[in-house]
Length: 404
Ligand code: NIG
Image: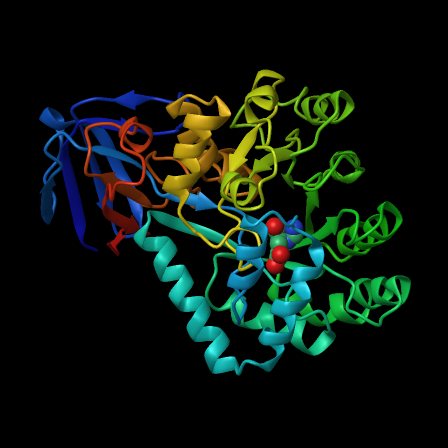
């Protein structure tokens, strides 16, 4: 097993249980795991050594919300939006048409290319969703292809009711034969609970069926207006509710209440519903930015994710999400980095408290955790916001292997 020692780290943001930020630190990667963290002066020998020369090292980004299994292009829709049109869920149908027509080979090739782009930007752990198949055959195909590439896969048959189908009959399909067919390939189920997509009642049916099938739950909620999404997510104990742009006081209270009994990262049992904010999507759709500051102040655990998809957010840049969270959403750099690493892991059941041995945890740097880390060509993570848009990702390791 090869070991790598990284020395002279200017700022090491661990996101570990104590949320330590170390200076002059060193890390040893051994095989897929982190085997040592401490002062450079006390570091053990390793097979190879890399001098960080004062650069910052942080956990690789955990992107907990993407839609990467698709074909086709929606530039025209984006241009219309920039000219003043509003985003509507109906655009999903355009991508569904193109995705159904693509071969397995092409869909896989496109997905691999997108995951490689994400990795080049520092993403080392990634969830992706189905949702551009919308019939049994194509949802199953998307789930199968995704399961061979992404770290975790979410079933999103409840993304849009296909044109010409009765919404309740389609919901029956999503909750029955489609769910059964995708089940071997997915860990999570999701529903787009929004005007123009699925009603509260239909969403409730989807969440119930998915829970009965043993899947973890996620919800797309409160993206385009206030509505029942957040409330349903909390009621069903969903791991995450994503978008959360339009929240009333009751929504914030419900989310905060879901964390009231939580005793911190080591407590996996009384975890609440993570609020996943998607700033790149908010900007691309010209929606108000999700109120991440308000949520954090209320005691809600927040994640930041890219929502990379062809309709509302065609970027997998987590650097961009972190930068936006700092410059425009009122988060400190530490809060934004935490949301983009630990927050995503928390929402995906992969942070330290959720793994009895701590061995497979991602989104934080501690002995035994997966060696997923990134080095910035900068002395601190603050430079992500201070030098927005600059190519700061210098090196990336995924499960101990240098991939950038
Ligand atoms: O998360 N909101 C629903 N789903 C995607 C958009 C998908 C699309 O328009 O193609 C989202 O923004």
